Length: 235
Ligand SMILES: C[S@@+](CC[C@H](N)C(=O)[O-])C[C@H]1O[C@@H](n2cnc3c(N)ncnc32)[C@H](O)[C@@H]1O
Image 1 (tube, helix red, strand yellow):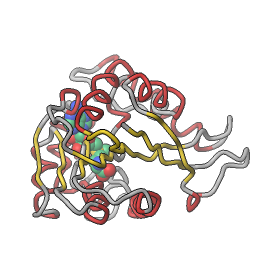
Image 2 (cartoon, helix red, strand yellow):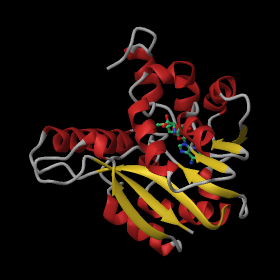
Image 3 (cartoon, rainbow, N blue to C red):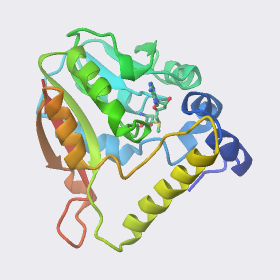
Image 4 (cartoon, rainbow, N blue to C red):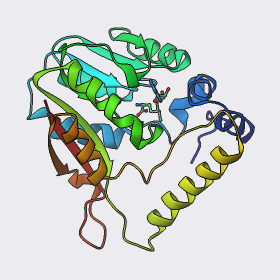
């Protein structure tokens, strides 16, 4: 799972016992060598699905980290590309890889942009938000988009009951809930809260019109549901 340039087990444990912000500050220099960085295959499939929905002028990457989504925006947007994240360490890495991007250190639960962007994306970060935090997050993205703007992000399909994938996400979430019950500060990262139905409901409550398309490069589960889809939420 981890390349030799990735973090050691000790570094990962220290990171996992920190707050989300500080944990990412610690992990930042090695983050791109971990499986937590959104893989190129997902970025490529997302960019491909979005290409025909442009052209886009300004783009926003919400929780940009080291810049996975900035890569996608730089391919699709003709105007300014902006990344926002609260980890200074992650933003330092993003700055090195994307010198042309505008990088903003902020908590995305209180975004302050107003009708500036045509395309917003987020990759690999929604599990950091409790369901009760999503209305503020989605309202901020809605405000940040121009009318007609698009908020897009990949979402994992529902693995069949009893499958390895289902047990893996369940095991991860149970471990995180136990960790957060006994240790402060909490490190919120849950997979099972970010399935399509509740995300769609919260996006619609924020005012978006929501559509989901399968990312066919990732195939389907035996029950016919796509392994990965792309949510397209229009302001
Ligand atoms: C798993 S990383 C994903 C980074 C990048 N989008 C990617 O796909 O590789 C999650 C990122 O979300 C950021 N993050 C989490 N909660 C945040 C918040 N409330 N405000 C801003 N950034 C946040 C973290 O600092 C981290 O950089």
